[in-house]
Image (cartoon, rainbow, N blue to C red):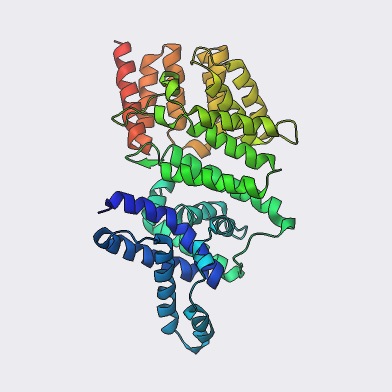
Length: 407
C-alpha cells in the first residue's frame, strides 16, 4: 500500500499538469480548477485503499473531465454545446502533455494584481491548499479564499484564452512570471510559517518551471539568472538544518554536503549570460550566491566582492531586503557598527514593520559588536514576529545564548 504522504506528494505534482490539460481542452479555468480539486479529493480517498493506478495522471484527467460533464449537465440549455464537447474523450496526447508552463502564464496574467498572481500560482501550479497559502501570506483563510476566487473570476471576465502569449508580448509577461517564480522559490526555501524550515515541493517546482522557461527563452539573461540563483541557493539545502530540524546558519554549515553539481550548473549558467546584455537583479543575486558557494569556508569568503555586488544591486534594484543583506556585507567588511548604521536607515520603512527580518539582522550585528543585552532583545522580538517554528526556535536560542554571554 502506498503511504499517504507519497500519495499527497504525487497529487501535488500532478495537479497543475491535469489542470493544464483540462484548461487547454475546455477553456474554462474556473470550472476546470474546481473539477480538478474534486478529482484530487477522490484520488486521495480511493488510492489509499485501492492503490495508485498505472497511469495516475490519465486517471485524474478522466475523473475531472467527468466532473465537468456532470456540472454542465445540471445547467441550462445554453451549456449544451459545451456538454457535447466535454462528452468527447480527452485525447491521449492532451492527458499526457504538460501544460504547466501555459498555466503559469495564465496565473500571472497582467489583469491580476501581483499578490493575486502569486496566490493563484501557488494554488493552481504549486498545488498548495488555500489554508497553506493564507498562512504564507499571514492573512485569514477566508480572505485568501476570496482573493483566489476573485482572481479566477477576473481571468474569466477578461476572456483569457489558455495559450502561450504572442511573441510581441512575451517579454513583458515574462517579467511577471519570473517575479512570481522567485517568490514561490523563496517561500519554499524558507517557509514563512509552519513547522518546516523549507518545502522542497515548492523549490523543486520553481526550478522545474524555470528550466522550462529557459528552454522557451534561451537568450533571456533574466531567465538564466533566476535559474542560476535557484540552483546556487538550493545547493545548500541539505546543510541548512540538523537531524532535529534546527537551523544551521551559513557560517556554520558543512560545505561538503552542498550539492556541487548544482553549484557547477549554476555557475556555468551565470558565466554564459554575463557580458551578453544588461545585468539584472537575478543575475546579481546569483553572482552573490556563487561567491558564497565557491568559498571553501566562511573565513575565506570574498566579502569585499559580495559587498561590491550588493552596491550595484542597491543602485539598480533597491529594496529593504537588499539593504538588510547589504548591511551584513558592510559589517563583514567594515565592522558591525558600520552595518548597524546602515540598518538604521530602515527603521522608518513601513514595509518591514510586520516582519522579523530587521530585528533578526540587527540582533546578529549587535552580537558581533558585543552588545549582548541589546542583541538579546532584538532576537526575542524577531522570534515573536516570525510564523516559522524553526526560525522561532533558532532566534529564541540565540537570545538565550547572548543572554548567557552578558552574564
